[in-house]
Image 1 (tube, rainbow, N blue to C red):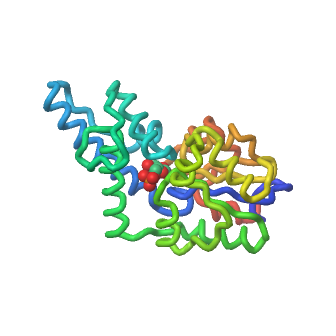
Image 2: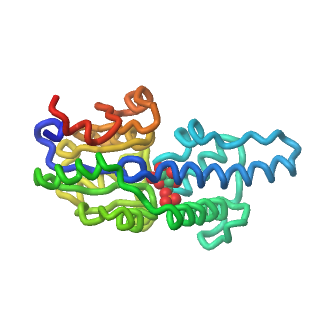
Length: 247
Ligand SMILES: O=P(O)(O)OC[C@H]1O[C@@H](O)[C@H](O)[C@@H](O)[C@@H]1O
């Protein structure tokens, strides 16, 4: 009925792009941040300005990863090294923290302006999972998870939350490492073989595969079903409600 293998006792959900329509907000904020930075840098070095690609650069370097990891990984893909800086760097500081703070200020601005939408199919699926008595955790790299879940009105579904803030505090490696998912399974008292992972990011399905979970469900919002399978998804759906349909 939930489209999951027998023996699954809990569900571990990524948030941005799986539960809430916020992956596009992150992609837009990353693009605005990196493009402003790259344009300024091109003006100084005389190199051509090559913009951040909202689809391919987003997928490969920032989607599903902790904010600072995303900044570092994208800059490394352009062979750019910036000083790390410190967490309280202002948004115009040319440091890893400065760029990350700039991106976060934009994310908050867009979310405050537009609100946060839960995918209707994800809401139906969460309700069905709760009715079935399965355990539920959210596992997101975002440090804004608590705020987004409550703005979307779905915070009450989750018994455990392992997010960007928790990962920072407990020094957990970010996705594609499995550590955040493993911590969430432990918090629910489940072995990985008893838990299902739901992910839309390539780094996220890779984390699910690396953790040895019962099943990794890839949620394809962007026409990348093959890449999700190659990176670790066992099943790919375009919406969580697809799992509820009789098979
Ligand atoms: O910047 P935040 O809210 O802490 O989120 C970190 C990352 O969280 C992930 O869920 C998103 O896929 C990334 O795009 C985002 O950058």
